[in-house]
Length: 543
Ligand code: FAD
Image (tube, rainbow, N blue to C red):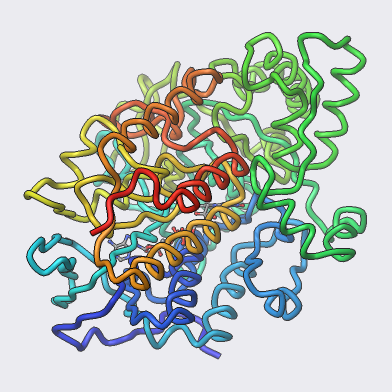
């Protein structure tokens, strides 16, 4: 069994294949499998040393999924499902990585993957109707179809703090964690950032460090995961009828079977508020807590009910009322930033060696050789952990120098925000596909369901093009403009755009503001994608 850092020599200087796939995470792995089944020649290029994507890179302590693993799993092969059993409600990163490796071995995927190979540029050759790709290993590859399976949360945001390069102690980035792990025993540790990676890792780091200082710019809502063995009642519908369960996931709002409620928070009495909230809280799952009321993401008053009850929970755990206040989010409606799932996060701030620094009141002046300087206070550290998030959804795509028709680069085209048709394609860039791209449900959904849907759609599109004797496909400008408008319209009737979130691009200085994923739901989205095909590729030009 190969476990890690499988290095494939990037030997072939020139290669021509039907399809190049960038990325060997869950998207790239399934894409490769599907392409092979359809008889396409394909090559996957991956900058990491092995498969797994997100789960290869994010090895920080406490890293887990936040969608129950029985749902966060491939469903394309029932036999694969029988061959793998998850050990917990929310599996740890090592277990999810082992699953990705298991899948790679089961379908013999590694032989078509070049690891340690970064795609740096791609150019559409109009005369040849092919893409020409360049890698950092000097490969020159041509292909008919080019698929960016490069991940929505795969490009960590560089720390934008003055003096960040000066620190002489240990420096870690949660999204690039060392494979051998880190022992913080007896060390003075700073964690910068309280998004999901910070919230998952802080209790673990606190358990080892002699002193832990958490630097928080914005508090996030987090709910206790209630991890452990999968509850029998949660597993029962899957075991009773796998196909029906997976079908329900595909046609659900967020990729996990869930009956949408018709109950409005603003029209129901306080006892109903509390009862419904408690049930969602006890589930330890994101989708129930994000759908306590039908109107919580639409209206501030309904949202405030849920947000207020979460704050009540935080205050019930954190002993010092001033610290509790700092940990209670008040600057964004509940759910407009992705809420976190935690194990013991808030209780960590009751420990005597853990300190919380509010960066809004005490901004970092500079990182120094020995630590972190605030106005009037210098703090010394042995290690700094950056849990500062990702350039989400578009970062990995535009970091490749992609040039489409007429010399236009994707970076130029998306300068004021991404423009796509269905989050799958963009005009002027024929035969380029993005998996879980901007304008699709993507990060608002159980990604496994969205990945499988995109891979199936893209593979079907390529196969039909081939069957019809055609070579290229791209959206019309009109269809794309219509979809962009629809994505915006859907977002604008919700509270989502009111938050400074990574969904809005707000965490990356200079990134254009705009709600990146499609909020209309996995079910409505799937219907739209199916309809495009049923109506003879509505909105797409084929040649
Ligand atoms: P990735 O797994 O990100 O893989 C993309 C790969 O592309 C990477 O390995 C990267 O190295 C490679 N790549 C990128 N650019 C290039 C290039 N130019 N050249 C070569 N290679 C390149 N989603 C959920 O639905 N549920 C969860 O519980 C959940 N938990 C998460 C927890 C964490 C800590 C993080 C960071 C994300 C989580 N996600 C979750 C989102 C997660 O990213 C997706 O679920 C899924 O793993 C994405 O798979 P992917 O293959 O599309 O992308």
